[in-house]
Image (cartoon, rainbow, N blue to C red):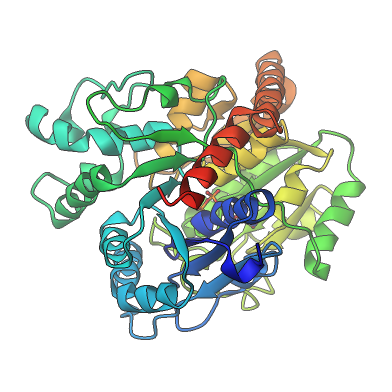
Length: 465
Ligand code: UDP
């Protein structure tokens, strides 16, 4: 079958690099292994691409088309969440137009912004699958929200008991996603509930997880909902370090002893306040361990927004937001990288000993796939749930203690690093992570469950079901 006439899957991705990266890997597999064609439509929320977007776009796999739909009319003042939702909703006509020109179509695959995608799929007459790029635990929570809305009296944030979902870590009130904490009568919660209800109308879910020792509960789906749920992960797009700045990181790592370096990164969009940035710097220094830190310019908005909406890469050449003398004092011990590092190459380097992460799900999976234990420092979205699960249920992470006002102090940063790098408990975390890595690799092997299930779904789509 010629490439032009292959049935095509449209993958509709909202403006989050943390979604785009696994979407590209799913698309790569559909094209390379299953003779489908794939176009990823990225509903960008900026008039022009950020440097981080360009770094990801440079690694688009062969045979996959990536089309960015830039939206020039988005109000710059809107919140991150609003801009993501608006970009998805407003892209509808352009998505339909682009998709029609790409027929024959086999399926539409969307991320968590389902409401807009349902309308597109209906218009195109194709099945709609959600590729969920966070863990099953979070999807299970979303699918249960309509029932919780009826069953839970009062505010979620006041609940004394955690939310218990089958096979999942109990979710403490403080770890719930912010729209659930915002208050039952808030607009944010109303939108969240609406979105969660829309989830029940899709044809199936692909979840970027695996069941063997990570999320066994994914196999059970949700009682009473006849929705197919497939674990297809851990899908991770390996990005080669091609540009000079990336190679500098790797050359530096080459010179460090095996397992000696703490890697610190808060994902594509996560930023810290100025005070928190300073505490982190001083804590790294205090720990006495080597580190590589992807530092972003401080931001007082806890949701961050750097990479999503055009960061200020280049403006930070002086890293002037770091504590006075920090760079001089840590020469030889640490490397501070501006805004973006070649993360998959860094995590696979033998010098890395542990990863201080915001627990974005890609970062978690990338760490597991490289057997690197985690220090969980969640910031927003699903990250607090991920941290709880990784620490309490999976046993591959230790969580930082966050003080009342939201600060992680320098003593805590140093303590938690020493804990993972120097103690028997840290050694146990490392051992658990290496064991989990083997399970992850098995899931993706030729006979593994994730590979098998992707093949079944691809066949279903090719048969027009
Ligand atoms: N990433 C990267 N370099 C960086 C920061 C992030 O390559 O300096 C990649 C990282 O490898 C991961 C993605 O960006 O694949 C971030 O996704 P994640 O789910 O961890 O967090 P998010 O950015 O969605 O908060």
